[in-house]
Length: 239
Image 1 (cartoon, rainbow, N blue to C red):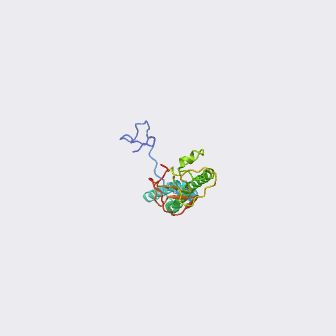
Image 2: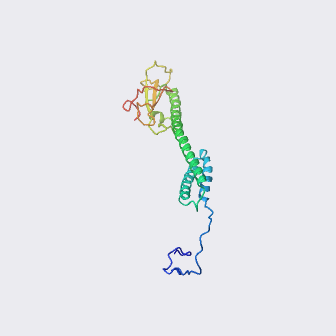
Image 3: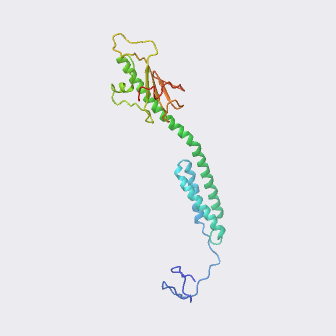
């Protein structure tokens, strides 16, 4: 016999317990009717309804998982002991609703991930383009003052403070000056020899390697799309 005070086994005579409790009368008989417990089922349904807002705030997916667990265990309790536990249909509704919400939000998030990654990639490229245009402006100022582009970016940096020579991914920008066009030097301007009136500026991109499809190439202040890289690690004057 189970002691109603401590829950332990009573003595063999059934009249006393080690906790000190003693039998003062015959045990009560079970009632003819029990009110089934439906708290777990109702809680699961309420949480499932709340989790509808997971489409707005993804953190509510945790609530959806709790609803699935409560609904599953509530159904199990009802099937194993329908006399004491009820709300089978409520628990089933909560389980179905929670499962649908979980799958729908997961699909929504799965579709949105590529879009998010593409947006982040565009932000990184935009930051690198902005840096390259900033350098292009500095190069034009240098040419206006000296009559030609500098031999290296280090030479440019020596004339301007706080000039960044890296892209968004902290790769060193590759620079090469050339003299392929006709000389357009201004008379009386002190210019270096040879006279450089063209330049190429390259960002290796996210992979940090030159000659791959993610490279950004600027020639004479214009960023080219899908340009063939004519500058390499060895050819670059910027190591």
